[in-house]
Image 1 (cartoon, each protein chain N blue to C red):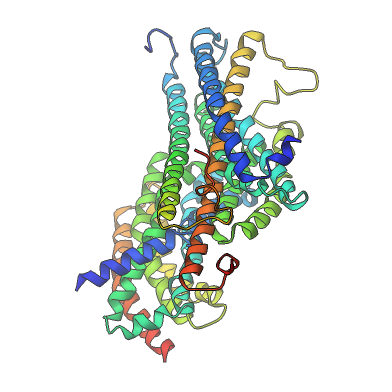
Image 2: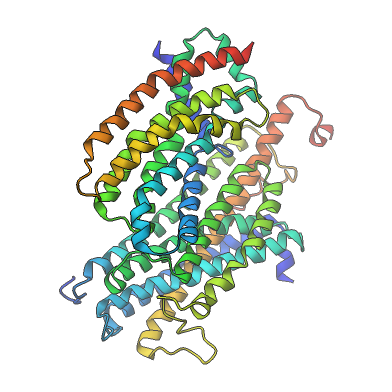
Length: 223
Length: 64
Length: 252
């Protein structure tokens, strides 16, 4: 059973890294967002340290959403999405594999880039570790929830923007617990573990809800 | 080697910057060489398949 | 008219083949001399102590990052105005090298800033404009990687390079226009360098070494680009021939 899963996973990974694939564009967008913030907010390092975790999280959320419309759009354009639907394989597993490949291509580079970018926001080492850890736990949830939006808007011509609007409300809980966990390190009384565990729980819920809802949406969009 | 030249209290920063610079330049140089080898391989492969360039007179145009 | 001869890729490849060994040897020699001067001859700064040695990497890398972008801007002009066939090859080859030098200049500057200014990064006019230059390099590389056809990609990248060239004077004069934490120019100035010869010499040798390194890598990267285009045209040619598509080649 796992033969086709592995084949699909490798195909998705190769497609995202190849010329035209969206793999590293997310990190570049993330870097651009982080560079623009101090222009607006001002170069005061203490202020930047205060809002650092929030800026990193919002940047990661936007960067993930940016890359998500490619999740099904490219396959739908050249018809391979219909083949996948007709292949009779469990659709939920198919969406899960595509999300995993997309997270590896777009989400993970964000997590790796986060410590470097937090130097620009003058975060001290403890906060850098906390932000990176929360991003590692939180970005899968963003990708999986975003997959629902991608599946819903796959048949629309300019689905990218609508996808972001649909998905942002669902990603608010992830953002709340992510930022509170990341920021807890600097504000002494605030605990780190509680929001972090909530974040992991949210990711696990998204692991179930995301593929199921996306598969449902894909079935409706095809016929 | 380090006690020969006294790099002072911030020796770590000096060595780190020289180290990172070497790593970056070596990585870039390595990538260019690897890319060159891969392309030569592909050209040889196409050569074996008998695909000729329009100027076809000389073997695939790369001077030996 | 050497410039015109270079227009033919095959002649450029043979020239590069002949030139590369000499430039590589000169580059290695310059680095050996530069590093020797840096570590054993150059005096310590009375305030910074030995940390000033980072300057021998930081300054040449910064100069090279701007030299590289100027080469790309020149190539962009070559692509758009003079229609020089190898101009976009030179621009595409120079982008990763420029990005690497900018990255090195940012990292060494940051590592120099920690002991001297007390922080890795500050949103200072010079540092920010160089960071913008770094993002532009990455943007150009991304643009090159997203457009399939090299000719169209060349034109698009040329336009973006020229638009981005406005950033070079901003970087150069940022230290004069805004009161920056980064010190003003001390070598390339109207009234000549303000550095003592004992520090200026190692800096010049290191700058020469970096420039030769750029030349070597740029030539090799251009050679790769030409081969990559040959492989692409051959593959397209093979694919069309295999499907029996009537191409001029087949018509002969």
